Amino acid sequence: KNEVEQSPQNLTAQEGEFITINCSYSVGISALHWLQQHPGGGIVSLFMLSSGKKKHGRLIATINIQEKHSSLHITASHPRDSAVYICAVEFGNQFYFGTGTSLTVIP
Amino acid sequence: EAEVAQSPRYKITEKSQAVAFWCDPISGHATLYWYRQILGQGPELLVQFQDESVVDDSQLPKDRFSAERLKGVDSTLKIQPAELGDSAMYLCASSSNLGTGELFFGEGSRLTVL
Image 1 (spheres, each protein chain N blue to C red):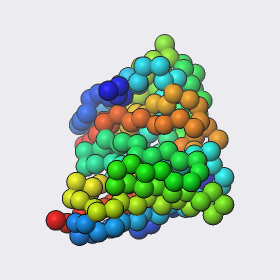
Image 2 (tube, rainbow over the protein chains, first blue to last red):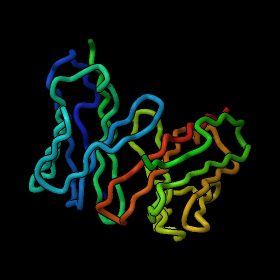
Image 3 (tube, rainbow over the protein chains, first blue to last red):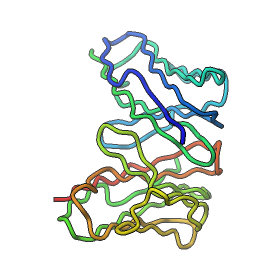
């Protein structure tokens, strides 16, 4: 089993701030996913990473395979970014999920 | 845009009653997952299908839960009898490949057992 830890658990930021959410895992993986979950439950896939860095709009995701660590960055945060961000790793043929980081961006 | 369909979105039932959830994955996706998510926690796998075959149901409480994907397309998750502790969000997800495939989630079915 792969242990997935996220930090921080909760995060409150002012609009415009740069935000970082961290994820670490215990065993080698085939890929890491960053997911976004809004109130009401629906989960949307933001990134799938196996190495390096990916960017989509104001979101940037990085992964360090050697250190078993990934970060999700949000630049120029906006209240609509308020959601739970979940890190999930693929190990074997299964996904293992972190408990999520609850982000609130205040106008 | 293709999406994973789930129903019902909300279900309120009394304990000891039977409950069923339905999921229709994205067309062509061979792998289908049912997850249970308790508030404040990450999703936990209940059952994973590859086409119509069960790949992993080790965490499925088989005394009361059952899942099927008879034709390898849509799937049903059943709980009978429901217990208070079953109150949670039930999420269905699908992926085109077994491993290294992007995961697509449905909106979820929120179950409340009274």
